[in-house]
Length: 235
Image 1: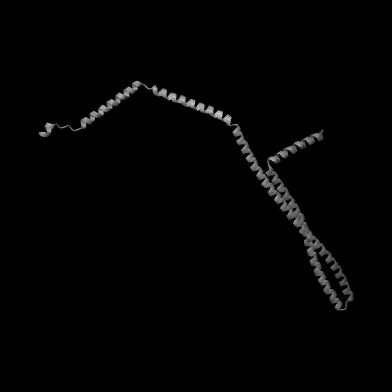
Image 2: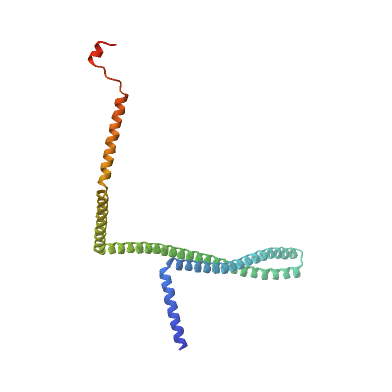
């Protein structure tokens, strides 16, 4: 029973994770990039350890080369001096040193070759990962574009199929607007026609009286007119 519940929980969790990954491909890509960085870091640590081995072998080879030169000189010197026993001892040491030097040189050569091979393997793996990541990024960008185009196409399709419904709505709205405009125009007409006719008559009489008064004032200010007789016999 517990096993079945565990399997069910794993299945639900796996489905949820897969759903999240599908909705967030960029996040999944970043996780993979971080995994690659971690793997490269571990590889470089091992590579550094191997490089350290090469350095130790190189140092040992240099030491043995110096010892070989010194032993050769000592062997030759004692041999010329007639010290055959000492010369023989140094010759034996020289032989052993030479064997050790050759062995270390072989080890150093193999270690250097292995180091070069590991470097190439790392570079090839990194370049392959980089190309794969770039390809995935392009695919994700293309996916975004296609999703956006799909959404726009679906929206356009919805607008086309729903054009009839929206047309009916616009028609009803137009009728409502025209009806309200007609009502408002009618209210204006009623208000204008409801103005008091007596008020209009009063205003008209006031305007006539003001005009008459203005005419009288004009006549009072004007100089008197001269008749024909007055013009002939001025006083």
